[in-house]
Length: 387
Ligand code: 5AD
Ligand code: SF4
Image (cartoon, rainbow, N blue to C red; front, top):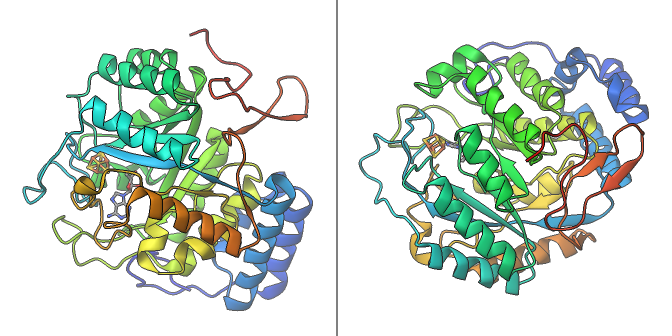
């Protein structure tokens, strides 16, 4: 077992089988018993125990979330970005990218098309692009919510708290802001000009404002160790995220990390499975990146804890220009086919396409009872500041 998740330089022994079995059995009885050390033990599991880990994660997913797999349609509406993340193909300094911005009318048209295909969550994703002011985004969100029966997820990066408040008031239900790596030094090196502390502050604001919050990280970033990966997973619990996206790092040739090895499929699946054990009710996508490093990646993700698929519903003309990493699947797959492929995959596993909006499960304040939030604009209850 390698200690560095990307470069595989040093080797540590896999833990003994009984140790893995004990951690698994504890987690299956009570997820709150899973400690950081337990997470690390599971990440280091050898091949035989890994199958037991995957089976346990699948069991926990079934017990807590049933067979529903929720579809979230992503619209990549701008590939412009002011940031310069060293891992990302859309980074500011990559002069080879033909930049684009969708007009609000194009975004609405793409959302209408997705909604007509039965997609009940629209994810608006872009680079960090201040050309879309909060007022503009709020206008788009309002139109979406008035016209279509959809939940809206934003994935537009760091903004001011006032912006987040405005967007929430406009009707945004959820926000994805990945922490990317829980190691502060690595974060600062890989995302020049930004800090992990800053990112965590934004995540707390989003929670306070009543968003259902998603975070997540990459697996196999250069410089990431298994112990950092364990921290990544523990951070998701500490943040109490309602969604977590975990995908492999894939080196982009036009970035400073070109030539580094990609994150490993099995390790990514292990991280996903361990996250499921730790966070039994959190929405976990089988990410596009997982599907991009292996043709069977998304299916395997669904079999070890994932319960969400995010078909790309961006107009085809723009797809090839949103290459965060190379080899991204679906560059030529129109929305109808992307959604149908996801539905076929779900049915092939004897699972069902999620009914309703697939909002986060939440604990009702003051009780241990779980409730399901299922109105498109309904707010997660508990401890949230007034909007
Ligand atoms: N490989 C895999 N995922 C990447 N992301 C950015 N660059 C890469 C890469 N090279 C992910 C990050 C970011 C999201 C938009 O894409 O996690 O949050
Ligand atoms: Fe911009 Fe996001 Fe890419 Fe960083 S990861 S360069 S913020 S699009």
